[in-house]
Length: 288
Picture 1 (cartoon, rainbow, N blue to C red):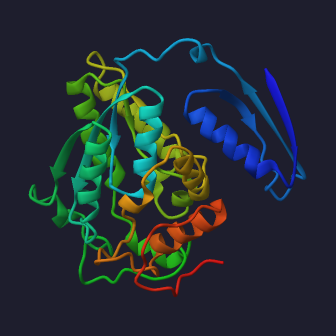
Picture 2: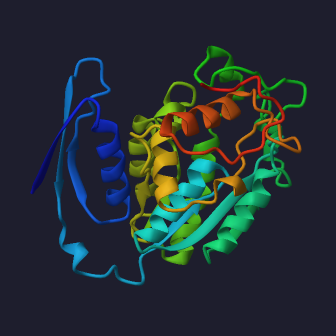
């Protein structure tokens, strides 16, 4: 067991290093206490070197990745590839106004040598029951402002992740994959119920009852307790091509720079102290 004690000034840097090593499969973190918490003046990271550092990952580990084409899911795909998984990517057209993200998803899947399945929920007629959201209804404007603002609730698409994960799990059974992964993170919890730990636990229980006797599926959410800045830090370590990911909900020619996801994206790069390669149409959402 390695015990690393760090002071307030250096905790974030060491945490980011441990996060990167952990998701590369180099170390296993037992516990992380961040000094950035209001009630903590110092942090302790305890990390154990697992046997896998001396044992190569078996080549037949398979995971289905819900790949939107965004920063989070793209970084997650790179993480899983680094962990030795063979990837099958799945993306969804659910009538989102920013469906151009799917072009980015297809490119990333090709870059990673992953198979890519595009599911057209729009053609299947499901978008008619997913309306009322700023993401799927042209009559509802995409709000500007911080991602955590109450106004962002209008971007909720009811049961979206449950629908996509159910289909992804069906693909996992047919592809004999042991896991299905999606990129929810702490910044999603406030707004989206189907990105919260309680949902993930309940869904994992449900889906394994649904496929009992056919498969055992692990629902992987490697970023569930991480911030988007943590994800940017990790992606930078893994050389993720951030400039080839799409976040903006408005789906214009460029990232708008002012909607909630653009604001969150800019904020994450700023807090991670990583150069943001994104070209924004507006500088109004600039984060210091």
